[in-house]
Image 1 (cartoon, helix red, strand yellow):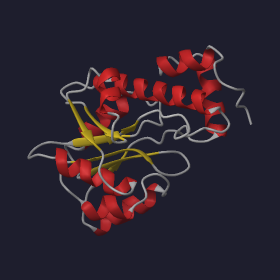
Image 2 (tube, one colour):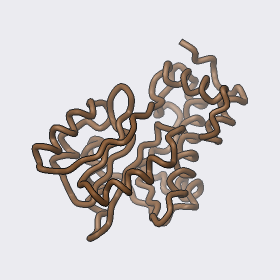
Image 3 (cartoon, one colour):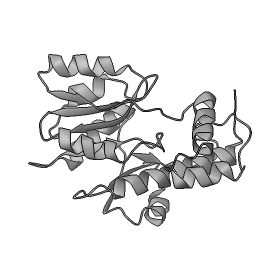
Image 4 (cartoon, rainbow, N blue to C red):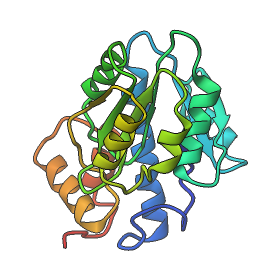
Length: 213
């Protein structure tokens, strides 16, 4: 699930100026696409927003097999709508957020492996929310009643248990949604973390403001 990098409508502005925040957002998108396209035996689908950005996503996501406009008033309804349109018999769907540019590619493979044994998979973001949710059947109540942007993962687990679903929780990872998280990302990449090549190149070129808290 991805949104186009429109200046003034992306996270991290402030502390960044609007143009820099949009360009960083695009780097997150590109790194997410690289990671997702590397998962074997999968079909990559870009669920995009807003209306009118299809041309942009077709230009940057040549690795994608399908594109579809996000539908819904909030994150939960958009996630549920994606599952509704993509799930087929004997097919698992994993939905990935774009705010985790350094997420190990192995996390996606683990998610698909887990869906061979359980009903739903959660990838928690440090501080609340999820970077990934996966399922192999429709569970509208689960995905519409949890705020996957900010709620603690425990709320999703408890609801899954009440619905009689088996679940698996992936290792926690950090998102990049606040100035402190951006500073952490920059420091990690400066220390030589060999991932998120688009984000790393942009940050280490010095094209953004000093974001250390």
